[in-house]
Image (cartoon, rainbow, N blue to C red; front, side, top):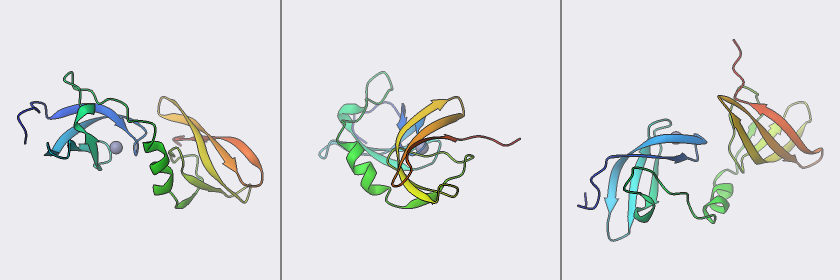
Length: 134
Ligand SMILES: [Zn+2]
């Protein structure tokens, strides 16, 4: 662990949780200028450029290129269910439309939210996500 890091916890956007989470430093490579931080929400470990770890305990936003890599990483198609949550670039199969589309926008509103999906045949549709059934 390098001297430059006195902090163990940072607040940052988790692209998997699609929300701001606490991240704990689990690895540090000064030469590669990378730090590995684990999300407290999904327990996934992500590599961050050390430059992005701010002294005030926040993680700076990633450069926009990372979004493209995300899209390639989420090639798997999942069935749409309003109780689930989805991420930008994710591919979804809708059981009613019988169509496959890609998430092009995510709007959070508390625990639930809306996603905009660009379907191959029926075009863009707004769907709900994260709806809890009580
Ligand atoms: Zn997470």
